Image (cartoon, rainbow, N blue to C red):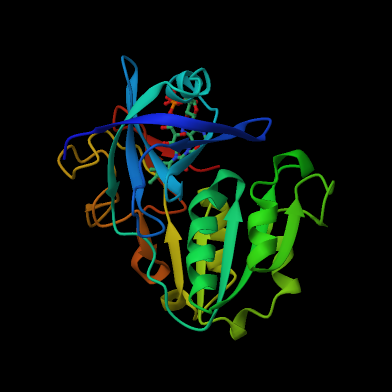
Length: 255
Ligand SMILES: Cc1cc2nc3c(=O)[nH]c(=O)nc-3n(C[C@H](O)[C@H](O)[C@H](O)COP(=O)(O)OP(=O)(O)OC[C@H]3O[C@@H](n4cnc5c(N)ncnc54)[C@H](O)[C@@H]3O)c2cc1C
């Protein structure tokens, strides 16, 4: 698939470390799908689709710095939508997002609400300044917030918000965020693995299933093609929650 050149129509600062870019192209995604974003002269990096015509980027390194330096009217190369996306099912669903992991969940929640599905959200953030898409989630249903420092909502990690929700009532639970958070939540929901879908993050080079850098041990399943969304029971017994591989293929242990 060739990249399209997408012009930036709007840049929205969301938090001190996160901004949204809206493009002159509608991407027509299944929520949970991603784009390979070609930052000319620097790198091509995976980004979830957060609006039908947009991405939401957290500043972490070289490529994201370059994206932050772009202005309205400039352009990026976009390849996608890629990957499988979330499967929407049931009448009452729970979204659990951590940090910039809220990006694909907001699009999913809006699509679900449009279809008459009852949506609740548990949103974990480092502090009140880093809460992403609060208004988008409030608009579609109940929102429970946690912050690591207690500056908004319940004090603690996202799992500290679980007692405020009746997990058994939900037909489906959707996760996206830091892997320790997702592994922790799956571990707290024994017997519910087939009702949980998680979007997971691995090092992507090609985004077309060739290079193998995003494969999960031991099966070799490719996160860029068969994922990035997996049912939790598909992740049991894999490297998920224990380690991932960096750019060179070396293991990076989870701490
Ligand atoms: C399917 C998928 C969807 C994604 N969706 C989004 C999204 O919607 N928004 C978004 O902001 N990011 C998203 N990411 C992560 C994003 O691809 C990386 O943050 C990006 O590639 C980093 O590139 P960089 O060159 O700026 O950082 P690098 O220069 O490669 O890394 C700089 C430093 O940041 C660290 N780092 C790299 N990636 C991450 C990370 N994900 N979290 C924390 N630290 C990191 C590195 O270990 C390194 O220390 C997604 C990843 C995947 C696989």
